[in-house]
Length: 181
Image (cartoon, rainbow, N blue to C red):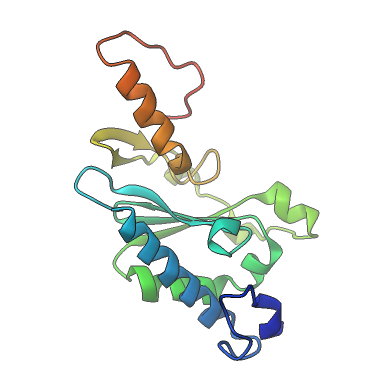
């Protein structure tokens, strides 16, 4: 990997030494964290949000959701798996060591790149029933970030849930398409 492969007009080729994926990821994590702060995330009504949104944060194949004191990573690109240790270190450096980190694989997408998932990445059956409570716009949800779709909660649907909440106030509503909550 060469640093010029990461230039998008915002990063100069000399900003990152060749092959220093940790520095690239850390810089993009700091940038994403700053943007989320501008968006007032997290706040007293929301402790669940998407910190890294793949291509949108210039880290294709990497999704990072924050669920209170838990970091949930969804990996769907071979480069993410190859550089997992550097990414985990960058997350700990930028987000903090005190949070639990859950690493989820999108096996189907990774297999398209020739990835064979090692046995140690399999989810332990005992954790499959473990749920945690999060809050989004003042609404509490119980989610299972260890199993299920991607990170266990569709953080990118926050605005849609708030919109439906506002237009359905005082009404009985059945959501037949919800994943959780």
